[in-house]
Image (cartoon, rainbow, N blue to C red):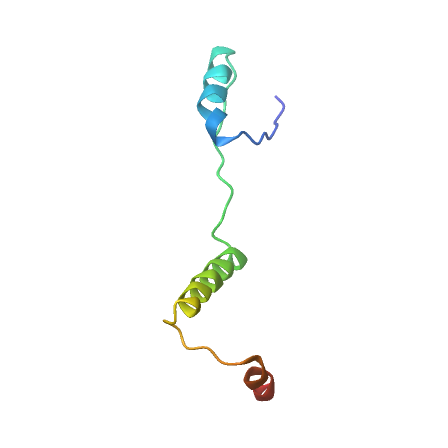
Amino acid sequence: MKHITIDVPDNKYSFFLELLNNLGIESHLEVPEKDNEAFSNLQQGFKELELAKNGKLKTRSLKDFLDEV
């Protein structure tokens, strides 16, 4: 048995699964893992950016940050 990976647009997914079933091809759904540290850090960064833009999170200037380092 061979294994392939295919990216299918969301709006064609149901059709694609039905096509595989009609052809008698067994399919296995594998969702890409998004629970890695980098992805979580990016999500948190975007949340903090949105809070800062809305004035709900206190920020500091780049100069102050660099002077601290």
